[in-house]
Image 1 (cartoon, rainbow, N blue to C red):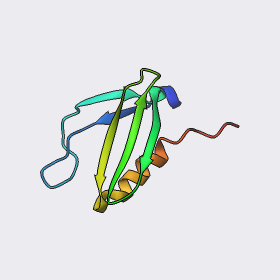
Image 2: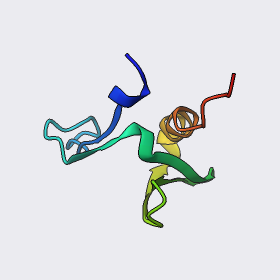
Image 3: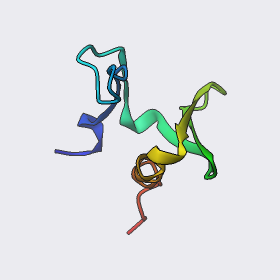
Length: 81
């Protein structure tokens, strides 16, 4: 399994905060990059899609900061060997 078989999947949030069951969309992982991270009361993780100049800002409440940090860490560029 290599990087070309991975994707970022978007699903809705369930009523009680867990993941929903329907897939809203997906993006191949190789075109997703981390554009900006701001941790605070409301944490922000902005992701970019390729070099299109378009992206998506995801906000996380304070109680969900651990997930914001995990997403930002997962989107860090892979170290060059």
